[in-house]
Amino acid sequence: MLPSEHVFIDLITDSGTGSMSDRQWSAMMLGDESYAGATSFYKLKEQVEKLFGFKYMLPTHQGRAAENVLFSALIKEGDVVPGNSHFDTTKGHIEYRRAHAIDCTIDEANDTQLEIPFKGNVDVAKLEEVLKKYPKEKVPFVCLTVTNNTAGGQPVSMENIEATAKLCKKYNVPLLMDSARFAENAYFIKTRETGYDKKSIKEIVREMYKYADMMTISAKKDGVVNMGGFCAMHSEELYGKASMFNIMYEGFLTYGGMSGRDMNALTVGLDENTEYEQLDARIRQVAYLGAKLDEYGIPYQRPAGGHAIFLDAKKVLPNVPKEEFVAQTLCAELYLESGVRGVEIGALLADRDPDTRENRYPALELTRLAIPRRVYTDRHMDVVAAALKNIYDRRDTIKHGFKITKEAPIMRHFTVELEKA
Ligand code: F0G
Image 1 (spheres, helix red, strand yellow):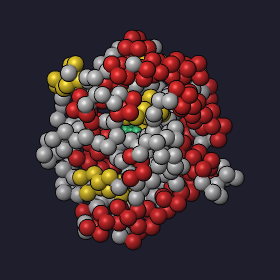
Image 2 (cartoon, rainbow, N blue to C red):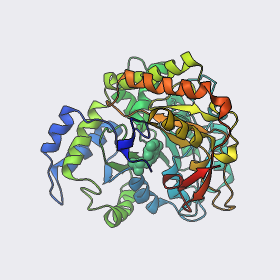
Image 3 (tube, rainbow, N blue to C red):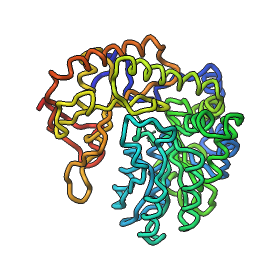
């Protein structure tokens, strides 16, 4: 609810908050705003096919719109969609259709202090159990999120992508990649997985997507644009079905939810942000904040993620009961201490169970500090770390959090109202 002018360093999200490059701004001036068949659309379509290998593409205004369009064509009541920690809008779009999202992330992701390279991975055994239990007619797709945002911006290895795809083939279920931070995932494959250090980010991206049947993307992250997204697929039949929903919810096929100039900026953004140097500078800034927190002994999801540091709120504020929303309490403390805005990834975001309406308490209460692309300097990170040190030093005095006074029936965390418990 804070107006942004009351925020000093804004780490609420890395979504749509990046700075566009000179080349992106120049491309905006050349936007073709034709209603149908704009050159801006065809340039974007070509870029998408080159990078990801998909022939069919529908532009949307952002990621959740791509989910809405594609899921309208795919999901029906009673379905199940297994995956690795579905993002909240993804889960929202599944549950809104009276289907269920089943989380098959590896258990290691719940131990914040465990340092392993690919903490976003799918537990292949858990996934196989789900695919065995439900007939394929009830599983419209498996959803693989790269990087795994909810588990801490943690990557999925190429080996795990391949193993997941193999299972999908065995059970005849398509694989969808939720691709918001696909380039950061490719960076971690290059720097952490054996056999990839000599490959370019673009080659790795192409290899990741050869295993997928379709994708949704919020272009506001690794596309480095302020607004935009799309869904893409190999199947002409699925494209036909999804087209109808794109026209209904977003706009005509060749612009969907985007203007021509925005599609131009995205075409350039996708090209630039799949270059190693740009990703390296960004991800090293996240690691820099992590290293500062190590200096002060402040616990977070290890290793540092691609787009954010996820503070382990239960360890930072050990005296706040889980019913009083620990990670949200840490957000409030951080703002009061320093004017820094983060975001809760905990019980508020986990929402109520759609069947029982009971609060869901996830294993982890995380406070996310997401770092926008090309916006802050390392000196800003020093301020954030110092503020957290001050809070950590007085953690014994923080005993209470918040209670809910008003909440929406679904995706409550966007608009929830709270008062001190
Ligand atoms: N999928 C993932 C993995 C995301 O992180 C997001 C958005 C979406 C889908 C939805 O995209 O916002 O463009 O509609 N994540 C933002 C965040 C909001 O702060 O992590 P959108």
